Every structure is written in structure tokens, then in C-alpha cells.
Image (cartoon, rainbow, N blue to C red; front, side, top):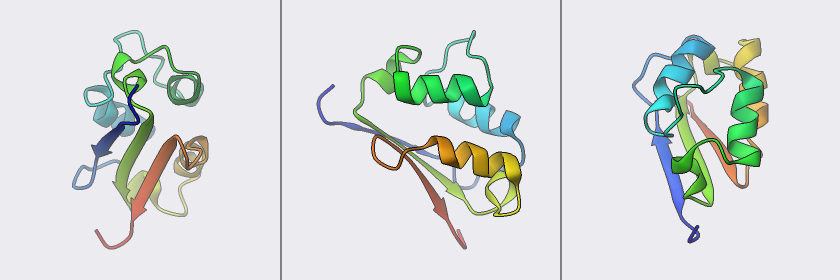
Length: 98
């Protein structure tokens, strides 16, 4: 790692469910076929590392999303997903009015 940042911009994509999120991040984050597609697997991927070579090559992961669908303030699963990001090494940027 060389103090680099992996930026995944999901703005403009319809993300209503966790499955939509997994579909959206699989390619840009280099998630393997055997990735668990659940919140525990995502937490392991971004915190522990060792699952995605693409994420592991970078010091910081930044994911941009729109404040709608899964990331609407009233969506419980979206809030749990957002809480997995630590704000330092792993950042979720929710854009309002995007």
C-alpha cells in the first residue's frame, strides 16, 4: 500500500437493497465469487482485509452513494451498513440532492 485511495462512485445507480449494493461494489472492489454478500463479510473485507486484492492494494476505501433507497435515513439495513464504515480507513459519503 502506498497511501492510495480506492474511490467507488455509486451515484446514479439504483441501490434499494443490500443485494443492489453488493452488485454495485463487486466489480470495482474486486470481490471474489465466494464473497458472502452479507454485513459480516463486508466488515471483514474492509476492516480485516485479506479478502479483496483490490481493496487491499489501497490504504483508504471511499464509497460515494446518494441519499435515497438503501441510504435513506429511514432504511434500517442502510444505517447498519453505513455504521460499518469507520470514517477513516473506510469512508461512506452520502450525497444529499445528488
